Each structure stands twice: as C-alpha cells, then as structure tokens.
Image (cartoon, rainbow, N blue to C red; front, side):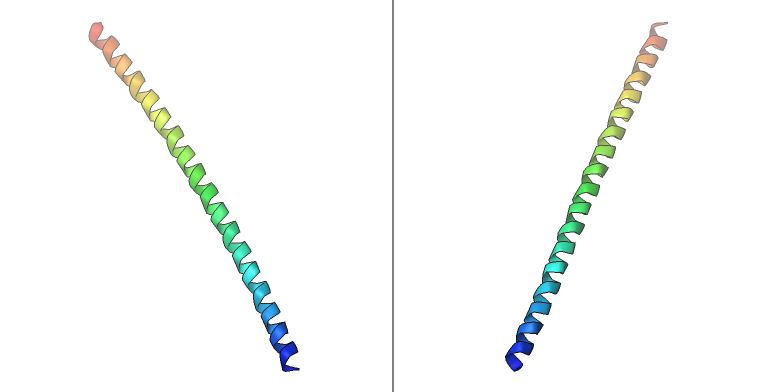
Length: 66
C-alpha cells in the first residue's frame, strides 16, 4: 500500500515537473522572439535615421553650393 502511494506521488510530481519545464521552454522561446523583434525594430529605426541624416547632408551641401 505504501509503495503504491509513493509511486502515485512520484508520478504526480514528475508530471508537474514536465509541465513546468514545458512552460519554461515556451516562455524562453517567446522572450527570444521578442528580443529578435526588438533588434529588428532598432535596425529599421537606425536605417531611417541614417537616411534622414544623409538627406540633411545633401540639402546642406546644395544650400552651400547655391
């Protein structure tokens, strides 16, 4: 009887552990995806800033030549 109780308890705890591990993996995967999206957004913003700076330089150069 005690052996059945111990086996049932071990089975329950093992199930919880697997569920917790699965949740942790899912959360880590989501965080990685958020990080990648953030990096992409930052790169896009940097490209836009670089383009705006380039346009300003060209405008300033044209103004100096006039």
